[in-house]
Amino acid sequence: MKFFYLTIALLLYKLPEADSQAFTMVVMEGSVATEVPSVRGTVNETFNCTAACANDTECILAYWDSDNKCVNYKYSEFDGGNNIKVDLSSKEFKVAIKTNKIDQCPSDTTPFGNYPYMDIRNGANLAYEWVPSGNELTLVNPCPAPGQPFRRTESLVVCIWTFNETVATREEAKTFCIGKGLKLTGIANKDEILALGGVCLDKERCWVDGYAPSCTTGSCTASQYTFEDGYTITEIGPFYENGKAV
Image (tube, rainbow, N blue to C red; front, side):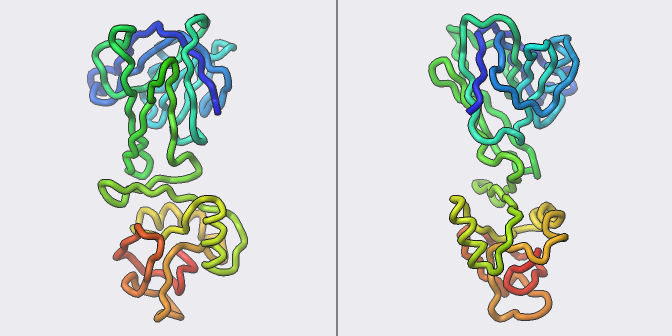
């Protein structure tokens, strides 16, 4: 768990009008106790650091560290839950949280509310929020890198991970995933194939969910496949026999 300590001295920084539909940056006095920066620069000017985060589609938090350097945090690089804790005694540095556009600074009389945003990787538009609880703001990334989110339906987003493990059969692959609290998934569309292709091309096989007992040689059509993960419906193809390769 990573802890961010802040105070509630707030201001809004809005992007130029051309980008006004995008985001608002809420700037607060405070500091980040544990740094896991995705970008580390030498920019000292507050608004330049904030603007750099605002203009980066994945950046959700800008921070000026103990060396007075600008640090940006990207959503996809968080590895799980991240906890922001308000510390009213800390007034040394600043953080800036990216939110959907708002017109009024939060305050003691105007509560923080939630800070919604979208993970736009692969066009998934996976919603997440900075959720307030007492003096804390908590961010949970349901699909941290190297996992990749893919939207299959309006209400279903899957997070696909690949693992560099040696397993001989699909059943062994399923057991491996279950052991990690995951599920071996099928491939539902060409975007998923392209995303996995770079990982699988240099492997002897890349196991996915799905089997086609009637197809034993050559390429198989999608209609020959049976998927067991419970959320893969596909009309794409071709595949190789028994899900061995993408």
